[in-house]
Image (tube, rainbow, N blue to C red; front, side):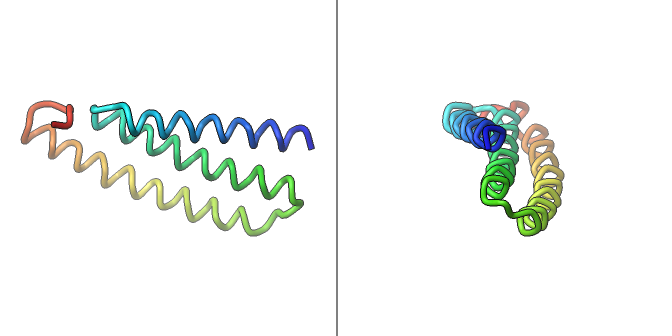
Length: 94
């Protein structure tokens, strides 16, 4: 029970860090990393809630789907960042 609460509180802290990074950063790379932290924190939050409730099967399906979606997101986002850098010469958002 204590392990689940520690993981749950850690995921809440990571969600706060991800939201802060999204709101405060003007750099595209930092914004992308903050969104990835936020996504991974939501996966960790789902695992912590399922551990506390005694579930095992549904969060595994969700996490596999979320991780594969995150991989696609990273590939597309880095391609967009490269194109943005080539056109603007900077990674700062105007």
